[in-house]
Image (spheres, rainbow, N blue to C red):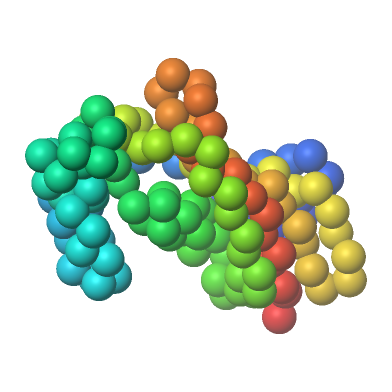
Amino acid sequence: MTAITELNINETIPSVTMPPVSRLDLIKYAGASGDFNPIHTIDKDAEKAGLPGIIAHGMWTMGNLSKLFTPFMEQGFIQSFSTRFTGMVFLDDVLTLSAELTEKQDDKLYFNVKAEKQDATIAAKGTVIFKLY
């Protein structure tokens, strides 16, 4: 794998296409995070809230985006991560996660990140500052 420091502006780290979102993914995340809002796990409660079905936790999506940087943890760490949730993620959605280098500044690398659904809509986008050791 290429060192993250060797990337040029507008280049990307390897993207990841996740398996379809499952109910078990969201139940496990609810337990790990303590976010037991039933719109994430119970169909009838999601429908009562006006949703077509249960939706993934926004932070579940954000957490998965952060995993793009796991292969580079020996070179640095995520110093800052901001995300804007732009669409809902439903059961069986397939997300492709990507990060593009936009700026290099001393010991910091700036990335635009996004989670794109199978229909090409963006579920989440944001910025990551990756600080090198």
